[in-house]
Image (cartoon, rainbow, N blue to C red; front, side, top):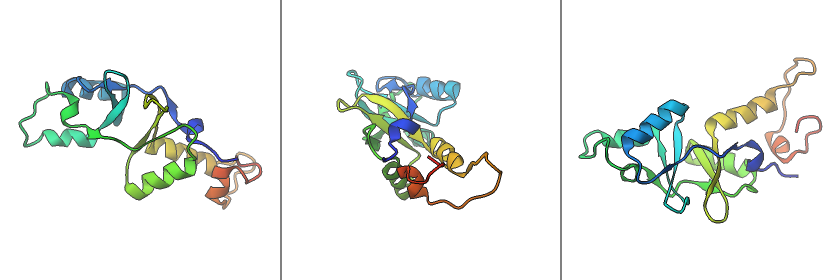
Length: 152
């Protein structure tokens, strides 16, 4: 059985509308300790993502903190359905050097988010073995697909 992203995602993440000001979005991210914030349209459909990196677009531009996040967000972020294999998501994030994946339903409404922090938690589970404290070498593909007995 393939391990899906649904099992490891953070469910119902905080998200904002595309009309929200840059200052308000920054405050939300600081309050919640977030580095990635999904952005939705008036129909609650995913249209972008705001990351800490996006704030750098303010420097040297005519944008102000009162400008809408739609002016600095990344459009069409990497998104997958909940049934997508964890292995596919992790591989794509590593190869494209992105910090998060948004999990959506077929109407593109946000269901969850999977970040590099979540990926580290998965890796920690793989490496953790409370039985005897011994280090083990395992095949991560086997873990992700649930074939390693006693690991998954």
